Image (tube, rainbow, N blue to C red; front, side):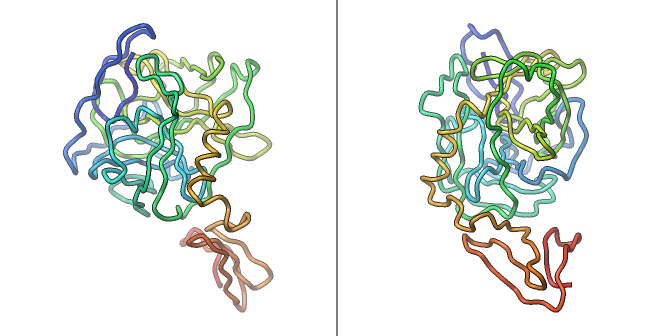
Length: 291
């Protein structure tokens, strides 16, 4: 079995098959505008980010803590933290922020042959300027049939080229397994480069990350499999605590809020305030500020 690796076109085989070695990454700067299968470009879901290697599209991730990005373990095989950057924005070509990576941590029980425990974290060298997404607390067999929103910076088919453009697609869960779930939607799928990206679930009006894109068929047109995040919460949250970031802002976010005429926000691991004559949301900036 091979995984949704970088942006190389790899054969996807049955679970009992041998692992396929990932192809070399694209040369720096190589890209084209081809993306997730059957989806649409999006500037939403700011916590869904691109993971670039030597400046080229590599994988996708999700900001789940001020300095923690959730991704797939296979995205971290054979790479170094210094070779990676996390890019926030609708595309690598229109980045809103580019953050250094200080450490990478694949799950200690990751099995590259069976693609089990395919989950890992990337520790950022600076706080991400987006609000982290919470992990889905639980999932069971009753989630089969429920529609999730998948986001990634991958390609449009198993024979396409990498792009680094954010797209999203909605698909129902086909089946729920002990640590994974699958999906099978004609004309829709995740593909190479979407690896490590999120499957978002909306519960009670709030978005949660429910899955991490892991693998699927070679043509990206039959099925896909995600790692369930609820079964690995202790690993993910443990890495967040160990990174020393935790929640130093006690719930305050980078986007901020208004406390009367005072702006309150989180920046560089601390709570900041700014007194104004009036305060409000500034859409052009994407955060609260003096108005």
